[in-house]
Length: 294
Image (cartoon, rainbow, N blue to C red; front, side, top):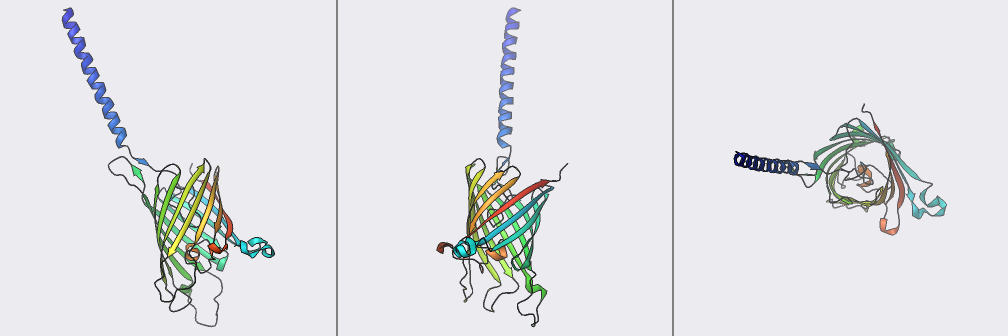
């Protein structure tokens, strides 16, 4: 009888051991397929002038103030650009976690702009499907409201409008470094000459490198592809910046060759200066996020 009890206890111990092992393996298997999404690829919805793949959460409102001073080469007579400034105020709202809408107004040509930004794919690993990148689509429209240069000719309201289509493809390589590519097309209903293109394709690149817990370096650059026989002496936009996180704020210090802050302005390049000749505009972005969730 003792032998039977002894053998039974050994058998039950083996069953328990195998069952426990199977449960552990099953749990490990489940954990290995749990999808993990990349977070904080960029800490702001904008890199410098460009949008980033960062989206607002549902029912969150982002208030943004952009400020660009004149070129520092203006010298002491213009107080190194501080006497001249362009400004843009913007609001962005998260309709849900993957769709953001926004509006803005800048004093340059009294321009109003609106946009829709939709995340199509999110960087992830694990699960049945993983993605190495985040892909976001931006559609925007801009309307200048200043008087036409020649009010005596027949002017059309449609001539005031420009359109922007952009695909943002970003990857967070590690906790410090993120990179974003931005193929873009800008369409202007009205251009300066008959030989200038209404459609301007370009490719942008931007990035972020985290140097401390609350500070990061950023950069962006666009290369425009001008296919017209007439190639105006426009400069491609270049910018470098410093992001500083302060609670609900992100404060961005900006150094750029463009005084404009909407895509139809700085990417098109008509107002951009020569970055490599020192024609740099200092400025800043301030963002503040408000939550309307209960």
